[in-house]
Amino acid sequence: MGAKIHPTAILSTGAEIADDVEIGPYCRIEGNARIGAGCVLQSQVLIGCNTIIGERNFIGHGAVLGTPPQDKKFDLECQSWLEIGNDNIFREYATANRATGEGKKTIIGSNCMLMAYSHVAHNCFVGNEVIMANVATLAGHVEIHDWCVIGGVIALHQFTRLGKGSFLGGFSALRQDLPPYMRAAGNPGSPGGVNIVGMQRRGFPIATIRAIRKFYKLLFLSGLKMDDAIAQILDLHGDIPQIQEIITFMKSTRNGIMRPKSQADPDDSDDFEGSIPMPGMSR
Image 1 (cartoon, rainbow, N blue to C red):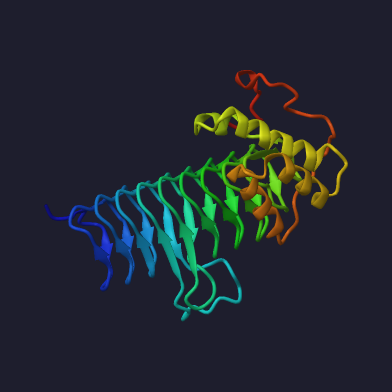
Image 2: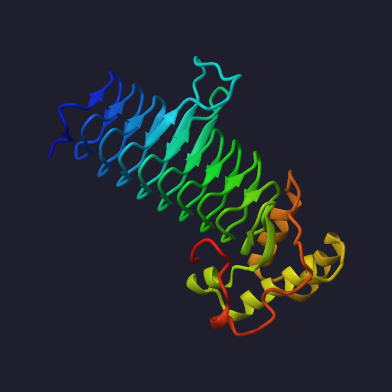
């Protein structure tokens, strides 16, 4: 079966389109763009040059992927890239820019959902199974690791990182890193416990969830210095891989690790079924 391309769509010379791709009215595909099998482009979608899109991606009306970065020093002759994996959903008017810097890449993984008006800036890394709600905005060089959930109308400062499995509530602004499996909200963002619901949904053992909660309390509620909190959790639960992930993430921070506004424990219960979500959206 040949590609289904609307007669009003514009395909530049050098664009590579898989045989079963659907391209709707008034779409534009620029040169050196590659679109994999099973992709659907609704209407008025723009795919910029040097954009590599994997298989079975749905790209909604008005989405713009792979245009030059919003960086005043960017040289339009620069050969940079946007790479997108498989099975993603880009809803209406979602945008993602190519990287800044020769040969550099902006990367979006697989099985992600970027809702309407969300934005991924230059040189960002977005992992797999990430959800970005409406008007979620990532500045340049932001890292969003696997299984993160990001609420609506948020902003992440350049070089900020969200660790694997973390949750960021809506209407938040982050300037520092959020460790894996934790949740945060506010402007400026501050941690508010661990992402119990997210870990439950992924089938984490109760012992692992309790160990991560213990680490949270040592880090943010005990008054210990970070190195002392790490030493204590290693003595208690150093054999748990997720604890090692959190420590590795924290030791590689560039912007620093965010701190809570309150010393109260938001998860002071072992009743995981009764945990209360952060504001913004479900996890």
